[in-house]
Length: 518
Ligand code: KIV
Ligand code: ZN
Image (cartoon, rainbow, N blue to C red; front, side, top):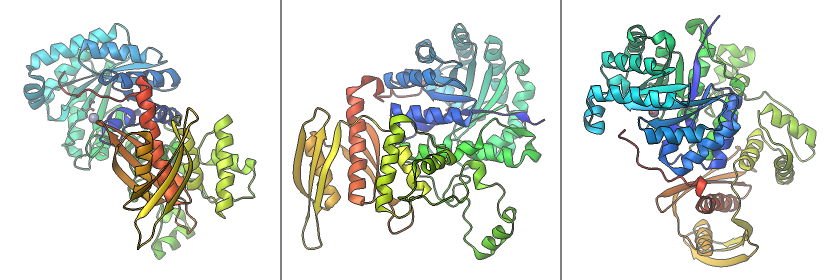
């Protein structure tokens, strides 16, 4: 029987740490629910000591996830481990993840510690955490650029102190697959007590080799792979979960290893992560890119029609992209709609389902055919909403080649008051955004403004993504509508509402302390 490889997902920690990828609490909870449904073994939910907001979100995730372990990252410091203890208290399967760098350059310049001091600190941290948690992972940061003999000494000592997983990161994405594989074999063979712990790898993608290196490690005995949805992560990202999992599944013959992942959930979670972070998936991205299963060349289309295996090594259905189904439109009933949600791996219940169905009917009145992408967009929009401090009541724009643009907007505040304003601008969107800023009394910087079409047809819905920055913090917003001005307003208001919500609810504020050091 194929050996099991454990999947440790760090989308909510290493992924969220990447610039411009922050998520609010609602969004993190939704991603965590989907990761559990995907059946990842471990969800790294955050870095509790990095901010009060991170601690609260790890705690909230720990409170809802039952079937996956929930990990909190800590430096090798008692105060970090205490923060993880508090955050993980509600978890059914808590894991404390402690890291400390072992490479000469990190020890000398960042930590200003000798190797012996590092070894001692690693052991004492693991012993400290072990007093309240039986599942401890220790990571030797920058392990690949460390002396292999020293890593074995540190790993042996932390296993002896009670670590149940030791993690070997290629923190800066420097390794080549063959050497990474043989390094993992060396570590496995030379670490005292390695049979009592799992060996994990954590690869970054600076040279585009994170997945290749993770797979080479698995072939050479790694038990766990750390990865993120869509390969999100610091700099060029982390190893992509979907690529590792599908490589193992498609090439079981070669690896003789598999995971417990429900691959039919991959597509839905990839879309969710892209929508809540505002980071688009490149069209030719393996597994989840828009073109991953598209056959454009005539000769390929001919082959696929005759037998899909001519050009497809896996089916779209295996990652949750459903086959041709009935077209949904304005005559479709609730049953057909709910069936389609199920097929798409999407979930909505109660109030949320009522709201999405009403939006679907509304959309079906405007468009002849409602596509799967439209439905996904409705569900994702409802899944990750924040409370509306400001609600759109009415808008109008006036623009043309000979005139400047003017925008009128009326917003309703949650206390019931409405405010209306007309402003001029360089274009209709600029005019409206200016009006919103005047009404809310804040002037955030618009850091990203992107419009796309959800489907390719003439009646497509516009999808707008915005990112705003204010006082050193950043928020995303997304809006969809058949009118692109309206989708822009909705996206901007969604980001403004996320800002207002975080400022009013201290537990959700993402003010991170600088990382680094021990
Ligand atoms: O890249 C890295 O070394 C990390 C560790 C904290 C595991 O993210
Ligand atoms: Zn990392």
